Every structure is written in structure tokens, then in C-alpha cells.
Image (cartoon, rainbow, N blue to C red; front, top):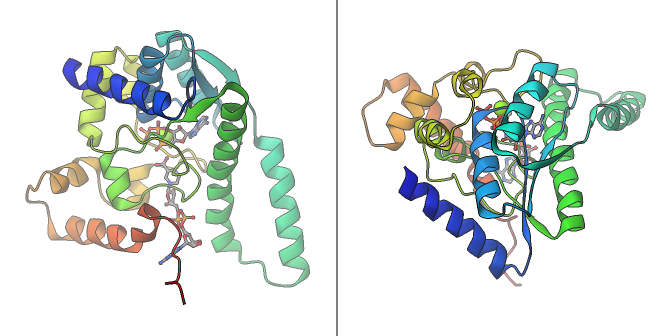
Length: 246
Ligand SMILES: Nc1ncnc2c1ncn2[C@@H]1O[C@H](COP(=O)(O)OP(=O)(O)OC[C@H]2O[C@@H]([n+]3cccc(C(=O)O)c3)[C@H](O)[C@@H]2O)[C@@H](O)[C@H]1O
Ligand SMILES: Nc1ncnc2c1ncn2[C@@H]1O[C@H](COP(=O)(O)OP(=O)(O)OP(=O)(O)O)[C@@H](O)[C@H]1O
Ligand SMILES: [Mg+2]
């Protein structure tokens, strides 16, 4: 894993250099994927890396964990609380749609959740512009394959260094990098609503997705869920569809 870490760090350095920029920025959630990316960008750019903690009606425990990541690797950081911004935006959307009698309560829950991820993306790009940094994403191979991310939200980034690493391999990277035990052992969550857990929402586990990606046998039910998610989210792995030139 040390060898892979060195290669990842060099790759990030080269990408930033090729872009003619100075460093890298990541959103630090208190979860393991962003912990690994935070440690990597700090290694790549000790003086030009930045972690941003962005609570959005989040559990305060997330921020405590995020600070363990920040302190663990010594990266510079800012906290930008998006709760009020999200409240203002969503109240206005809700008001407009309700006035027209077109508000769909159930669909709105996902829209509300995805808007949190997109506000984070907006924030990262605004801060990245200020410093001349690239925005680094945290998607791993399991999330990328299943499309388990918000299009133009946490999926809206410049680099995706972990995209070939299974969730298990991300855990290995985290151990070698020295990420705090509390983060190594917590359940993966997008933190988009109270009590959300990735595995509950997906209906399968990261272990099964990892096994599937490694070509191992997994139960038919899980295979079906993974293949269905992959198919439904194909659009997220491409640029916006364009017509042929007429
Ligand atoms: N065929 C197609 N061609 C082109 N575009 C298509 C499309 N089908 C849908 N779309 C568009 O895509 C939108 C749906 O995609 P999207 O907005 O991403 O939303 P969606 O995939 O419905 O939801 C995002 C999922 O990712 C999860 N997530 C989000 C963020 C972080 C994490 C995490 O692990 O931390 C997980 C979240 O819990 C949820 O299950 C539609 O509203 C539509 O605009
Ligand atoms: N509160 C937050 N503050 C800053 N960034 C966040 C926050 N919540 C989510 N993010 C960003 O969105 C990304 C996607 O979240 P995701 O849950 O997939 O990763 P994670 O939290 O790092 O790991 P895990 O999947 O184990 O929870 C995070 O890695 C992080 O970059
Ligand atoms: Mg998380």
C-alpha cells in the first residue's frame, strides 16, 4: 500500500501541475473516504492543501470526526456551515412549488439531500478559485460503479484518485496513512439525513460490492441490486448528453 500511496501522491501533484494550479482542496466529512483523500493531498502539497468541513443540518459528531482527520494530518482547514443557506434555498423552492400545488413530499426528500451535496460542491469550487486549487473527489470504486453519489454534488470534482480502490482497499490505505481508529470503524454514511447509512439505503453491503468488482461470486439478490444501480446511473459517469451535429 505504501507504494500505491506514493504513486497516488505523485499523480495528484502532476495533475495539479499540469493544470497550472497550486494545490488541492477536499470536503472533510468525518468519513473514511475523505479522510484518505485529506491525508493524500496534505502529503502532495504540505503548504497548499485545504480541508473544508461543511455541516448542513448535520450531526455534530461528524464535525468532531472531521476534526480528528484535520488534526491527524495537520492540514489547513475552514468550517463553512451550510445549514442556513440550505434552509433559505429549500424554503423558497418549497414555497414556489406548493403555491402551484406541485410539491411532491417524497421526491423532495431526495432533492433536499442532493442539494446538500451540491451546496458543498459550490462551496469547494468557490474556495478552490480563491486559492488556485483543484477540487479532489472521494468516490471509491464501489461508489463509482453503483453511481452512489450525487450528480454534480460530491460527483462534481476535478480529480477522483480513489476510483480504482474498493472500499476495503480504501480502509487499508487509511490504516497505512494513520487515520484515527474512530474513523476506520464507523459505518459509511452520506450524512444526508438523520440516521442514513449507505448499506441500508443501497440494500447491499460494500463487502459484496467489493467482491463483485473483484469478480467473486455473490448472492443473486445482491448482484441484481448492483447491476441495476450501475445501469440506472450510467449517465452520471459521462458528460451531459449532446445531440449529433445536425
Ligand atoms: N438516463 C438519464 N440521463 C441523464 N440524466 C439522468 C438520467 N436519469 C436521471 N438523470 C438525472 O440525474 C438525476 C438523479 O441523479 P442524482 O441527482 O445524483 O440523484 P439520485 O441518484 O437519485 O440520488 C443520489 C444517491 O446518491 C446517494 N449519495 C449522495 C451523495 C453522497 C453519497 C455518499 O455516499 O456520501 C451518496 C444518495 O443517498 C442517493 O441515494 C435526475 O434528477 C436527473 O436529473
Ligand atoms: N459535512 C461534510 N463536510 C465536508 N464534506 C462533506 C461533508 N459531508 C460529505 N462531504 C463530502 O462528500 C463526500 C462524499 O461522502 P461519502 O459519505 O461518500 O464519503 P465519506 O464520508 O468520506 O466516507 P463514508 O462513505 O465512509 O461515509 C465526502 O467524502 C466529503 O468529501
Ligand atoms: Mg460519509
